[in-house]
Image (tube, rainbow, N blue to C red):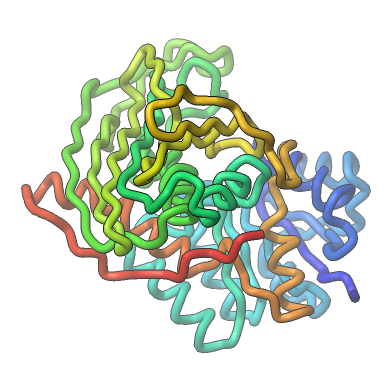
Amino acid sequence: MKKVVTAIIGNGNISPIYLKNLTTVFNDRVEVKGVCDLIPERSQKASGDWNVPVIYDTMYDVFKDSEIEIVLNLTRPGEHYGVAVEALKYGKNTHSEKPMSITRENAKELFDTAKEKGLLIGVAPDTFLGAGIQTCREILDSGEIGEPIGATAYMLCHGHESWHPDPEFYYEYGGGPMLDMGPYYVTALVNLLGPVDQLCGVTKKSFPTRTITSEKKYGKVIDVEVDTHVNGIMEFKNGAVGTITTSFDVWGSDHPCIEIYGTKGSMQVPDPNGFGGPVRIQKGKEPFVEVSVTKPYAENSRGIAVWDMASALREGTPLRASGSLGFHVLDIMLGFGESSAAGAHYKLVTTCERPAAL
């Protein structure tokens, strides 16, 4: 198969693992030709560390390169839409870090533009394609725990200002625990249970300011612009009911990340922010037992969705981390806050196909 030529825009904290995997693990289908960043030193380092031949001065230099077929968009969340929409206008397939946008309007424009131009648009996360959740998918599809009746999901921590060098954006519009970490959890749930029909939410902002304690900006006080404790209830189209809590306000918790409840038993799903992890099931009144993880990609395999997109371009296989999935996940995440503000249920305006198993 002829490799799909790719360029990366944004060479921040997440880019090294993408570069590592795309140049060493998924390089049977993907070729990374170039990198680009607003801070030239970042792209220079990325190019040197991973032997990437081209450093582009601007993103438009990427778009004008006729060899580039996929633009991998690793910019900050508020910039995902702006980069992706320009890439699509220039006829490039795009894969963006999550979320695809911070508004439905911009997400719809991306989705519609890609459809109109016959291009593929993909959205992180791709962790649901890893060994842990794909093993859970196989167990669920086999009927081993029966028909799904419910689920719970928890992402509870006390924020990122204690370790992240530049944590401000986590507390700005477009940030918060749901848009930051929710994509991993909601995507995993939609992969396992299918699309959501309607939902309700209750959200709050527990602390008006946060103080950075990481070294670079120690002592700086951040104004919190977004709700930082988000609770939601989802009614899936298959009849299952799920609850989710994401929070930057909780000091400690011992909840499992995700549990799926079926008519015959239950299943504990590993951390959806990773690719591997333990899978545990129980049936009837029996205790939970750990089962073998039967699928590949248990290690950090970020970039597997770009590899999957390359396969879709060359072989016509279904795109799993698709724009329709990302748009539906965004619709769900935004819906929790809107439901809370309105004091009413929110009916989803999007839907998607349950992604094909890998």
